[in-house]
Length: 357
Ligand code: DP6
Image (cartoon, rainbow, N blue to C red; front, side, top):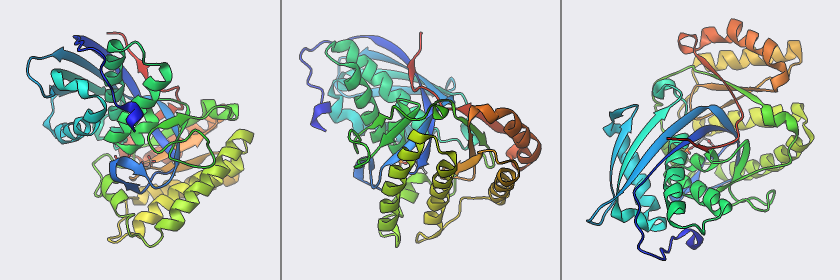
């Protein structure tokens, strides 16, 4: 993406500090399978969340020698576990932010959710970092428009982790080329407007079934889609699902919404179960919750549905107007399946924001 290569017009250097909050997101149409540098094999669509966020401050200090250096603090303490991912992120983005070479960065990051909760933190973490970097770039170059700022932040975030591309804007974004969305790109995510208003306040209660780290990472899972016997059918299905889901989300037809969203979640896990080597990330509690959700829906006719990410946790999706009976159901009947009864009441959000220091 040559459009994103920064050609510094001056040799300006600045000392600058910025702080950004970026949300996590939950895919309704799943990104599963990629080429190099997180170029997705199929388009994906997600709800941007509101409460599951990462806040990251970055202090940029010019330094006399070339080469980028940084210190990283997670929840106030240096944390070497994050260094490989950070080094990889900076290596990937450097061609597009070459000015970073003359800086030392002090990065401090906090999550609103426990790191060990199993919630995907790489999307919010990479998006918050990318936005901080873009903020400094804009400070040096007043010619950076709002559109360039947002798309390049999503682009840089994607280089760190694919799904992070969808954590810049909200409430609903699409990432990956598709004939269904004219402006959609493999390089960055774009916001989808003019959908039915019910989706602008949709609720997402995240049931934490398993807190520990996953036995097979998303990166390994994506790699197993290479040579997967059902890969091509799956990529084609994602295109069709995205097309239908956009129609359904314009009309606000919740029965069809549920049918597509749950099918996407189960297909994602079906891909894992039919990879070579095959594996399972659902736990017995995951299945018990799914059965209970289906029974509840049959009995009450309330439009409650689930989706899954690449793990055992469950995201329960429902319109805001049905919050009271659904939260009662979650508290009384589903929380016993959660680790220490733990769940997070989240909802769709409006995207990342700059915080005051
Ligand atoms: C199942 O974005 O975590 O959550 O690009 O390798 O960092 P990398 O993978 P990642 O994969 C997310 C997979 C998913 C589906 C989705 O969010 O679309």
